[in-house]
Length: 95
View 1 (spheres, one colour):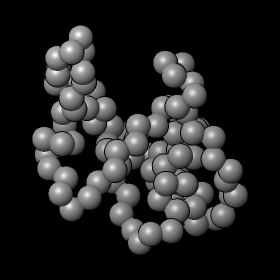
View 2 (cartoon, one colour; view 1 turned 45 degrees about the vertical axis):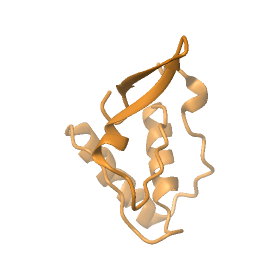
View 3 (cartoon, rainbow, N blue to C red; view 1 turned 90 degrees about the vertical axis):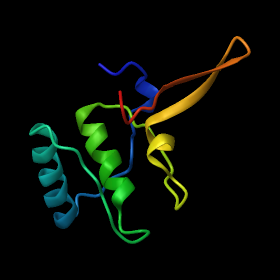
View 4 (cartoon, one colour; view 1 turned 180 degrees about the vertical axis):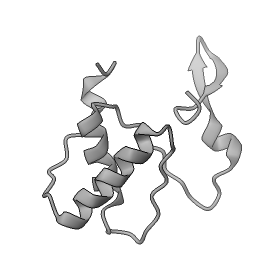
């Protein structure tokens, strides 16, 4: 069961044949221990497919915005203010 059920996506999803086929491929890759990277033009449904897969697997979504200035460090560690001091911890991509 998810630690934070509110983070499990609940997208409205229409079972379009092409999307269902992609979801099946994504699930096979996930079950095989693979990582998924979805690339495509804006608006083609990458987030919708990812959200639907996470919904079916009952997994939480961690959102991370990428931009041209993204670095390995910005993707793997994040700062947290604890008791007035900055502590660095692994990002959700590392956990």
